[in-house]
Image (cartoon, rainbow over all chains, first blue to last red; front, top):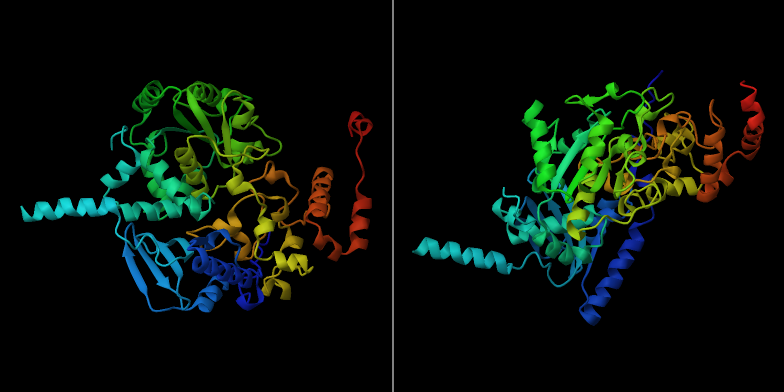
Length: 133
Length: 363
């Protein structure tokens, strides 16, 4: 039996579109309006949406990069980038090998992961006390 | 790691900060196909959940399911979940062997009676107990002994869930899935050949988080992962809707990434999370690599009439496949209109219905 050559390996990314990019941007627009009106925060899991090759990159290009970029190192690196639309953040979580384990669009003033967590503050205080004593 | 530790404590003992834990919960929610709004609830539940005892039995299998789970590059979220359970018996992975391994199994069963999770991969031979034994115990006997004290059973892989490849015609060993042999325990089927690793651990995480088995479909599969067909979530679906198909593996349509339906793709009748969860750390899935879906998470996928035969065209042994396919085609709808109707009618005509009389003639 001849092994078939996989189809579409050389497909041009521009030709494969789910049509989900523009609706997603509209969803972000509505969420941003809700944040402004009611303070309602929204998180969109990009991994739950069917996207063709290149579409995730197109979303990222449309959102662009804004004034704030946060690097987080907890269970591997994470990057939290405010897009060129203030209040819209692109959050990418990686493991220690740099593999993406989650990608989200967060519509909020600041992603909650950036703020120090009470449990970590408490542990840090214990450590600082030990260092000084 | 103490068995009395909660999962939150176990992660903290590994130096994971609260921030890291919340990141872990966000990735876990994504893995479980739950909305991000549930992250705080998952965090609270996982913080308090006790590490469950897991007994993993491998029967007629190729170890592909275990490979799928353990070959992912660590540390991954699924790796962390796998590390936080208390895996008390897995004869491929455990250091102990022989009587020591069996003693560990017995001890875990006694200590966690009624509370442990039984994971099974592989089908169970029923024609002759000698076809597959562990420590001289037949697979049927071991399954029934361990299942009796389990809180729930997770059938990992298509072999344990539906019989899989050992069950393929002519099924020489009389292979059966777990669900045909155990009737009095909750069973979660996690089929796939192999299943996606995050789906295996996602089911475990869901059980840890909510303390109950997830919502299942009619084949016992968690709806969170198997609720949508590959076809419904396929990025090539717009081409199907427009009637644009690759006809061969190297034609213009193939190069343009058109739908692989005519090349035998079983996406319309296959329920799994490949199209969104993807494989190899989220890199791609078979259709994205240019190959039709084989339908490996469905019962009897090996006997479906040929991987490269379109599901609406007849194959050698296919009265059943054709009926199935026509039903699926009707449900999926749009693109069948774009197929060559004359050809389809001719092919349907060629199908001879086989009645009871024909079978009795023995011919």
